[in-house]
Figure (cartoon, helix red, strand yellow):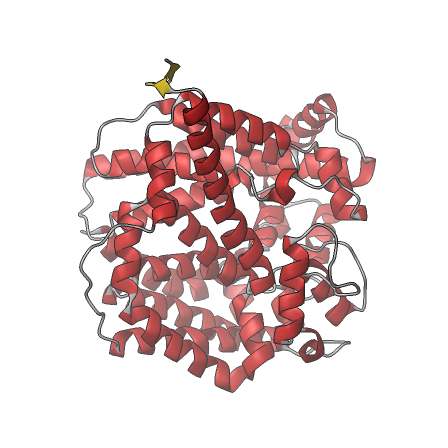
Length: 490
C-alpha cells in the first residue's frame, strides 16, 4: 500500500468514526457533524486524485487541526477536576451549534469548489529549470556552510536576540526594543533552511551532511519554549512531517517504514506534549508575574504535571488545553456570523491594507492612527484597542468579508483552476531547492491560517527573502575580506 492510499483511507475512516466516537457532539451538532464528515470525504477525494499534492497536504493539515478535531476537544472533561473542567469550558465560550453550522457549511462549500476546480483542470507540464538566483545562492551557502557563514549566523542571531521579558513587554505594551535591521536579518528562516537542507540530503540519498546543521533549529525551538510558545516544537515537526508525506506520497510503505514511523512518533509525541506543557507554564510566568525564572518554571512543571497521585488527571487537563489551542475557531465564529461592532469593510479596503503593510515594514508608523492586523480583530468584533492578539483571521474569514458566502466558493473555484494548471512548475521548484521549500510551505500555511496580506507579505515574503539576501551579501563580503578554504582562513 502506498502512503497516498493510507492518506485516503485515513480521512474516510476518520469521517465514518465520528458518529461512533463523538456521539454526544454529533447529537448536539447534527448539521455540523455532517459537514465535518463531508469535509473528510472531500479530502479523501483530493488525495485520491493526486492533484496539487503539496497544496492539498498543507490545506488538509490546517483544516484537520483547526476544524476536524473539534468533536474531540472536550473528550476528557469527565475525567478532570471540576474547576479544571470549568476553565476548559471558558475557553469554548464562543462556540454554539447554530453559528457552528455556518462555519462548517461554508468550509464544505469552499473545499468542494476547490476539488471541482482541480479535477477539471489539466495540469500544464513544464521543462525543469533552476530556481531563481536568491534560492540557488542561499542553498549553495547552506549545503556546506563554511566558517564565514557560522560567523555571520552567530552575529545576526546575537543582534536579533530578545529576552523573554522584552518579547512579552512588546506584546503587552508595545514598548519592546526593535529587532536588528527591523527583523529583516532574522535567522528564523535560515535555521529552517538548514534543517531542510539536511532533510534533502537524506531524502534524495545525497552525500551525508553534518548533523550540526540541525543545531540552529534546536536552539530556536528551545528559546521558543522558554518564551512561552506552545507550538515551537509542534510547528517544526509538522513542517517536516508534511514535507515527508509529500516527498513519499507515491511510495509503498513496508514494515521497516512502519517501525521507523512508530519510533519517530514514540519520540516526538511525548516531546511535543511536554514542550507544550512547559511552554504553557512559561507563558503564565511571563504574562502574570512579569518575570522569568527557570527554577520556578521547573518547579511548576513537575509539581503540576507529575503529581503522581493524579498524573492522569493532570495529563488530561493539559491535553485538553492543547486541543483547544489547536482548534482555534473563535475568529471564524465572529467573522462568518457577522458579529461585528465596527463594519470590517471600512477597515479592510485595499488602501488600508497597503498602509498596514508599509507600517509593518518600516520603523515607527508612517501612517498614523492605522490599526495593525494584530489589533484589527479585537477592534472590529469586540470594540477593544489592544497591542496584540493572536486570534487567527483565517483565509475562510477573509474570503467571507470580501465575497460573502455565495461568491467565495466561485473565487476558490477559479483559484483552483489557475494554481492547478501551474502546480507542476511549483512542485518542481519544491523538489530542487530547500530554501524555496521553506519559504513556500511557511507562506502557504500562514496565508491559509491568518488569511491576511498584511501578515504574510512582511513576515513570510519580505523578511524571509531579505534574510536570505543579507546572509548572501555578508558571506560574500567576509569571503572577500578574509579568503577561506574548507572552513579555515587561508
